[in-house]
Length: 475
Image 1 (cartoon, rainbow, N blue to C red):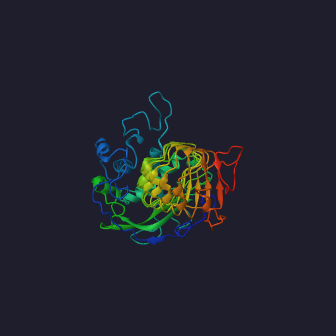
Image 2: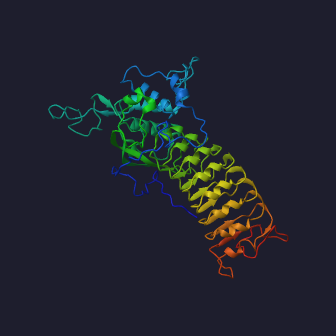
Image 3: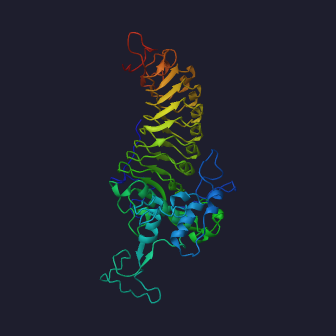
């Protein structure tokens, strides 16, 4: 089954929430959490239900020193993103006690050093992210001399002093959002993207970057300066009981087929309103950050066809709004399928094919009663097929070929009456399919079901599978 996906990096294919131009959709977002226990601001409502190995505020805050001056934007950004666990303290060499790294000049041996993506993002926001001074005098409403021929465009080039795009009086959530997108740019080699229009243009709102979609949302009005005073008491992004302000906030990032490299930064967790992340068909490596699990509004995660490695984090099971999870064609991802994926009750499409996954199919996947498409082919999955998949009554496509499954198909799978495609060839299974699933074929004499494509190991002089209703018996 195909899923249509646009490519805004090549030419936006927008949905109703997209703001490809400067238009935005205004929406209130004042829901509150029923759980009053403390959990970092940029994480899901309530405490996590799976173990999170990321450092806690209690462990990282004592190592930080609050900025002495309220207008020290660089220190304010560093303190905020570390205290809110958006970044690790080790990302900032000087704060981590590494006096040789993270500097422009070089290390103690005179060799040039490389700034981390987080340090580069900080430096951009502090040193290069400026707007020209306003062209209208606030007191007399007379135009000032801007040395650009009378052009009142505030982004026009002039020789006048410039003011920072962000300050310590900017909303803390906006600061974190701009920091996160800037880190994403540097962490994935943004200078070499195929399309990076307006990304990191000084003074350009991050919602106007190519591939970014935003909506006007109500967010806590707490400023960065106020957040520094009590980092553990910052209102949650969905706390409707506090003073609010309206800002353009990111709800989708779509940059597929865009020559993105590097790795995904954990700073993406600072986009709490994100609903779609589409970065398929790039060259993104590294492991999946466990912090992605805190994006509980994310409904579509498309990271297929990249160079990701490591395991699938169990924290993905926290993404309660997830409907489309595509991690296929990342051959470096190994380990087991997390049982926590069974918590994604709204999931409709799960694609984990062409990876290096091992072990059994978790029985918890039988809880995904809204699942329509399950693709697990070309892995190293093994053991018998779980009886629990009988509960996937809405499943239309089940692809299990190219694994190491043994045993036979459970008789109870006949309850999957909406199944249209089943592929189970190239496994280690031996069974008689006629009495199990042939009744689901749309050509069955007794009326049958919807099954159109049934592919098994039913070819040869001594086939492992006996099947009179299969549509294909590949060699």
